[in-house]
Length: 422
Image (cartoon, rainbow, N blue to C red; front, side, top):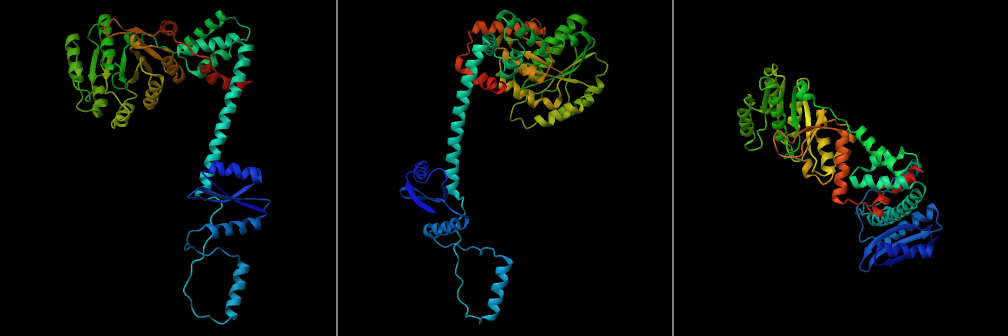
């Protein structure tokens, strides 16, 4: 067995030198930090007994001081022989106990550092290999199906999520022309985007508007209330102001009720909402304003529990702002998923630079869209959601903003998928 002890400035240099001297079969026996950097002891062409002896010798040479530790375990035969020998031999005079140094483990803290370094190198090599494979796969796909590549580019510029864009394009024949491919992609997105129609203003219902702070819940409620009165009159409409968090929220609802000539009910606390709904069973349409919820809202879970208990008496509608980034929209959907929202309302379309991200979130969540809002005017800036109209608007926004997806972005997004599916 050949043993080498090498000192270098860092672990990477030491490992490189050991590999050069001993080859790839070398085994690290120990490592420790020194004034010069790190000292690594390695061996090659070893057997189990030699390895243990080398490790013990290295430990004795490098251990700074003896450490009190229990003696190593012995086999039953060794213990029996030791007991018999001790019984036959005269009892020696007691001597002060001395600590027996234990050999260090083969994988100590320094070995962990070495393992981390090797792991990072492997991860870097893997990323490089994946990048090269993605480039090759993307180039091959561009040669084989140029229309597919162009459609992926255009869907990315619209803001459609990666997996949704890939799913749409994967259904196309490789020989399809670009015009037909565009029509198919738009039709596919329109089909996947679920809408409910103008059902509240036609049939009524009990709707609690939920969502993050500032997404426009109260404004949407006001627009729907005015539309209902213009169509049916104020008789069968009731408003509930349960937002006790935002300053002036209940006063705003009271002012709206006075303006419209409809009653506004204010529960003493949010937990009293189920009892209030029981008293409002005679109204065809009940619109409920709830407090906005932030990520650090300690009362969020409690409000969800109250609304869940009312599930048989009302439906919840999640209000999302189209101007919000797709990641934040996805998080909002997840936060309110325990309520199992029956539909969604999309506000602030006039402030959005892109609609593809919002549409992708709704399609992935299979969350039906009821109404959209593209301004502050009450009730003009409100319309029932129409899927084809929204997809077309997403395309227009992308063109108007000059959105572009460069080749590197497309290669990183879809090259790996191409490689995985070929």
